[in-house]
Length: 100
Image 1: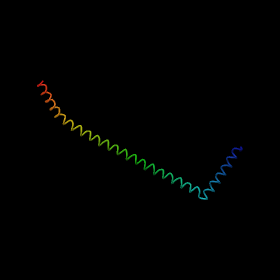
Image 2: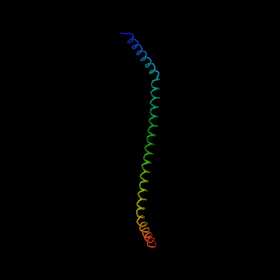
Image 3: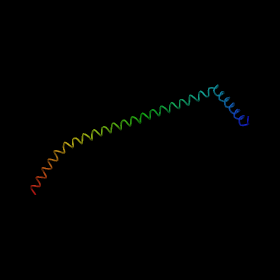
Image 4: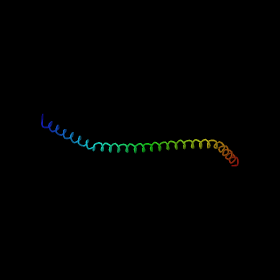
């Protein structure tokens, strides 16, 4: 066995002893709880922000549909008015042409 292998074995044993000592004192458990709590808070924040984005997108889509309905109604009314206006203006211009 080479020196490197022996050093790795000693390092591994020391690390295992340290981890075992921390586990017995409850430090690892407290650390794991703290990390899990932080991750859960982050998850809640991401979920909330994602829902806000979805709500904003739905509002934009609803407003676009509303504007499309308004535009269609205006176009329909303008088309109905255009016939009468066109007839009036044709009559007026024909009358001016007869006078000239």
